[in-house]
Length: 108
Image (cartoon, rainbow, N blue to C red; front, side, top):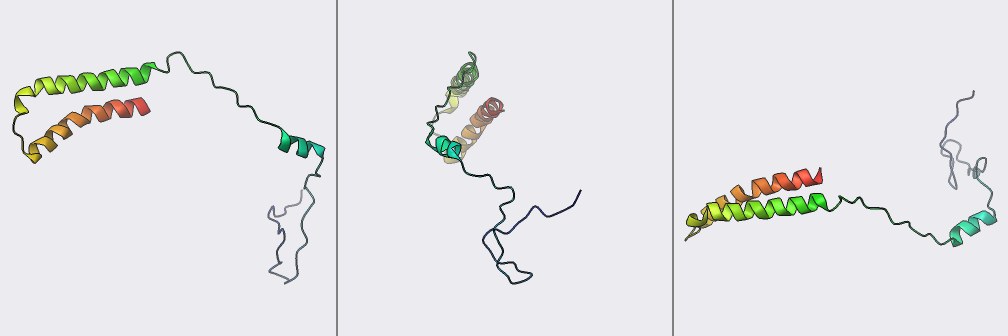
C-alpha cells in the first residue's frame, strides 16, 4: 500500500516547482443526467412525530414557576411595602434562584 497525500492542488500554482498544477480528476465523478435530476427534484420534508408527552415538561415547568411566584408573594406579602432599591434587588435575587433551577432542569 502506497502512502500519498490526500491534499491536492486544484487551480493553483505548485509552490515547490513554480509550475502551474493541473487539476486532479482521478476520483472526480463524471456528471450525468442523474445530477440534473437531483438538482431539479423538489424536496418534501417529512413532519417529525412529536411524542405525546412533549407538552408535559413545559407545562410542569410553567406551573412550578407560577406556583413558586404565588407562594413567594404570599410569604413576603407583609414585606412588600415601601422598599428601597437594595431590598427589591434582594427580593428579585431570592425569587429567581428556584426559577433558574427549574429552567435549567427543563433544558437538560
